[in-house]
Length: 166
Image (cartoon, rainbow, N blue to C red; front, top):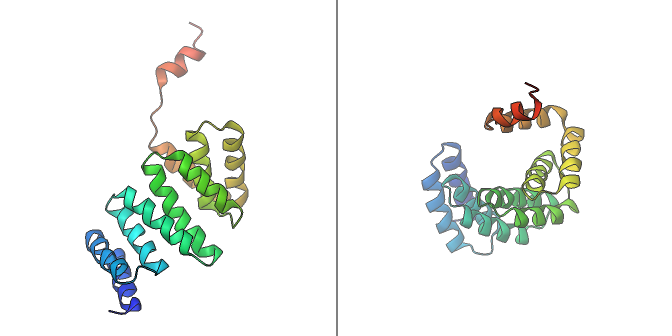
């Protein structure tokens, strides 16, 4: 099968949320075309959707290293960082983002930089990336934080304990 045929079929699987089929088919694609960056990227993308984050990180890094344009490097790097975040490998994700920073910064990379900085307790970095998210796209940064806060629980007892005077 030709590379374009693999790619079209995989895109259909992903659009239809047939993630297991996409994953299985992308494994075949990589086996047949191991030197194709897009094959590794699509395997990484499929791996994220089937929650195989170790394989997603590995394949996204392969694709990142094979990429020959800044756009492809960022695309592959973002997928690797999402997998690293899910694996709680925050230092690896932060390091990759630092390498990508020399290539191109986008709102998604700043969002990930913010999360990794926060997870690694890098106060000044966290603050810088928080501000940068809003500088790049205020609406997207607000939506990102609302989404993030929507999953957070508030420790009312600690809040009350620190503020109650009675």
